[in-house]
Image 1 (cartoon, rainbow, N blue to C red):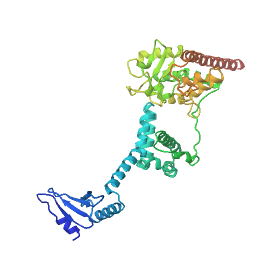
Image 2 (image 1 turned 90 degrees about the vertical axis):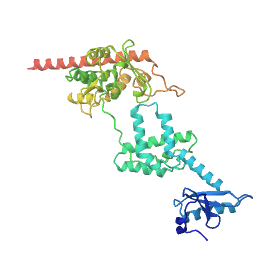
Image 3 (image 1 turned 45 degrees about the vertical axis):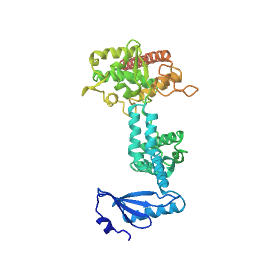
Length: 411
């Protein structure tokens, strides 16, 4: 007689395992431990193998019969149902290895490991918060453009348009890595061009005309804040590195003999070590600061504790105290200021400037130049830049004095 749930529950273990048949090759095997295992016995190619279908009650009687019927169909076609099961398992394993989550981990290890911590953190956030929860289990080769767009629309719904565009770029990098490694045929994000709400290009405020720069240099020279912030403010235009690179500068990174700052790769946005030649004026500022902070790790330690660097608001707050708000001049704006004037006024080669800005510069073969490329020329450029800023400050001070004298004579 066919089995029933009542009969199945009543089956008790014995000293040896035993079999209770259902019908059409299905049976349950009861072990001495009390486990009840479904088996399907069939005849194929002159043999009588059996196939395990799972444990009761995890696999119900109804489900066991469904699995048996499916296996019987394969047997009728001359196919071993165990081979079909193995193929399905292998396919599932392969799909898991080629899932978006798995490929994104491979991409991160191969393409992001050498970049700065901030770049890695941004990529991780895009993956963990906005992509993997929705696409992670999907085989990357099967992901269609609308699926990616749904993820990006959710980000847009939060009102974070720039984040949506950034996440799209991260997704594109993962898909292109999948194409390169043979796990996908194409990047579906290419079909999403124009699908996202465009963002307004926001340029960080910078002063780039010589007259305005002269006035800025006069204001900076007269800044009356703490010695640490004053030094950071005065070095900002001289070094024109990224604000985070400046405030996290360590004394161990200053090579006094070579007269240069040597920032390791892990602290740089592009993940490449960087050298900043020091002009005479920059050396003097650092030498003046050394007795005050030389015993701490950071050149510009935080007022809240020497184990931490200066706050990212330090230079920005100093500029605001001098009358320069975020719409006029930012800490990052010193880079645009140098980029513009070194090119348009002082006439230095663009590749010298780009190297000094720590931008990725490649040769004709597409290879990135190393950090020492054009170093003597860059050192000369940094000295001329510092002298130029001094001259602008002196000229502005002289004009202010002349204006004041005319005012006195007129009275």
